[in-house]
Length: 491
Image (cartoon, rainbow, N blue to C red):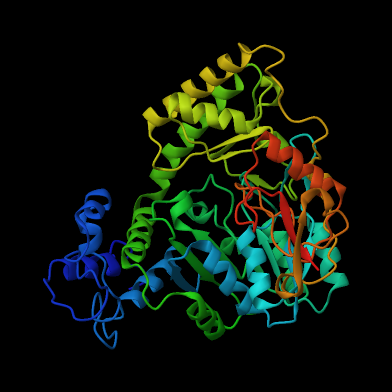
C-alpha cells in the first residue's frame, strides 16, 4: 500500500462524504453549510462548508475501521523516506511543540539553534525545558545568520552530556542548509537525536538539484510546512520520524497531545493531495520552478544597486547548500530599507514579498508562481530600483545609522524560558529595559526569529535594535505591547 502513491485516501473519502447527503446531529454546527451565512459562503465558497467533515462518522466510521488517516500517513511516510509520519493541521508550530516532548521531559536540557522560529521557543516554554543555544554562523557581509557550524555542535555536545537532543532549522528562512549529515553524525556519536525544523524544506525530497533533505541526511525527525513551499492549505504540516533514538509510540502520543480532535479535514485532504502531486510530478514541477527562480536571479543581478545572494556564500559547513527558490536581495545600495521597498511594491505594483527588513527583500518562489508572475516580479523590482534612484539624497535614508547588526545581538540566559514567562513580571519602557530579564518573546516578523526570548538578559544593543528598527518599519509579532513602547520583564 505504501507504494501506491497515486491514491489519496483522505481526499477520496472526503469527496464521498460531501456527496452522501448525510443528515447530522453531531458536529460541526453549521451542518454542511446549511446554518452558515450567505456572505461567508460567497467569500470562502459553499464547498468549504460541505467539505467540513469530521474524521469519525465523517470520512471514516465511528471506530475508524477504514483507517483513512492511518493509510494517508503511511503513504506520506513512504513518499518522504521516513518510517512514520503524522499530518498536522496547526502548521509546523504545532509540530515543533510535539517534537520537544517526543525527546525531552520537563526540566531536562536540549540544544537549540538560536536562529529558530518563535514556535520552537514556545515549545521550550510549554515543555519547561532548559535550552543551551547553538550559535549560528554569522555572515557579516550580508548581516544574515546561516546554519549551525559543525564545531559549534560538537562543542555544545561535549560540554552538555545531559542534553537530550539537538533542535535546529534547515533550510533557514533565507534558504541556506547546513551540513546536516555531519551534524547528525555528531549527535549520534553522543547518542543524541537530531530534530530539524524543516518548515521551509518539505519539497527538497523531490528533486535531485535541491539540497539533501533532513531525513535523508540522517536526521531523526523532520517537521515540514506543506503550506509554505508546496500546495497545501494554510496550517498543513507533516512530522516525519526515522530514528532508533526516539520511540515511535512516544512520537505518536506527543503528536496527539497537540493535534485537535476536530481537525479541519480540508487541510488534511490538501496534504494528502499534495503528497500525491509531488510523489508523481515533483521532479518536473520543481525543475520548472528552479528554472523560473534562476531566471529571476539573473535578471535581479543585472539591476544596479541590487545584490543577489547566491552559491558564492557556500562553505561546505554551516553554509553547505542553497535552496535557490528562496531569492534574497540586498537593496541597501538603493538608499531604501526593505520595509520601504516592500510597502512600495505592495502599493504600486501589487506585489507581495516573502520578507523585508532593514536592508533585505526575499522572494519565495513556489510551484504556484508561473512565468507570468515571474515576469511581474522582475518588472516590479526594476521599477522599484528606478523609483529609488529618482529620490533625492535627503529622501534616501536607508538603514538607520547606528542600528546594531545581528551578530551584536548576544544571548545571555539568566533563567529558563518557562521560569521567566510564568514568573512574577512587570512592564517597563523599552528604553529602561537594559539590564532586565525578558519575560516574553520579541520577534521581528518575518522571519519570526525572536531577538529576545524569555529568560534572556536585555542589553543596549537589543534596545537600540528595536528602537531604530521600529523607526524603519519593523513589526514585532505577538508582543504584549504591539507598539513595543514597553517590554514584559521579570519583576
